[in-house]
Image (cartoon, rainbow, N blue to C red; front, top):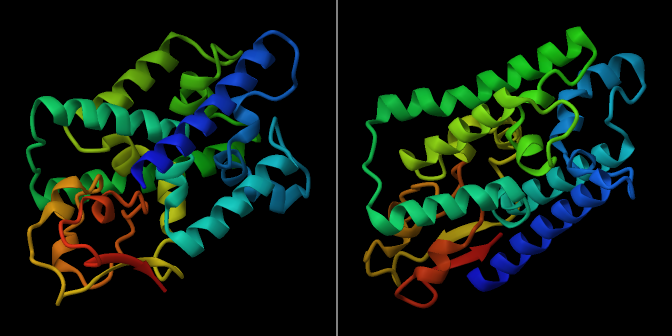
Length: 252
């Protein structure tokens, strides 16, 4: 299952980079920004007000957003762990970091504060975009900086922000995705009572806690009957690592 997920991640990463290169060569009007669903979130208030697509955002961004929301309602935040190219990079850093030493757990108060940052960023970005009628976040967006091949709004500060955003992952597992990503914060509003989720069979489970150790979001899978945490991205690492076949499974 993890091999299949890796193929998905590489496929979407290749698509983004391919169109970014074409755009930089002048052979396409689409770049990484064209495939960004967060652009639709940023400009949603503006679109509702003016009924026009502002800035570089168009109906394609909104169509992708609708698709991502549908995936989220059905399979939790699977977009983050199966599709998002920045999520794939963040996971690579997490696994490389964990290979050398285990992550030290932070206290609960500190983590609650860190979790709240992405919601604050979401509110600031949406409000700033609305009052300025422009994608003011674009020069500071880690996604655009990483895959825009030095787009027209990218400056030295953009790379500094990207580096620091990814640096968080050296201290917190999947740090950027869990604490800083505003799109992840937005998806969490739709990631509660989803159609499909992971279930744990108490009778079959031998409490080896392998599921806890491999969870990229540090969810206590071994202590749950069904995983409804908003942090769950349906990466299925826990299901793949489970020592007792049938203890963890996807259900409705």
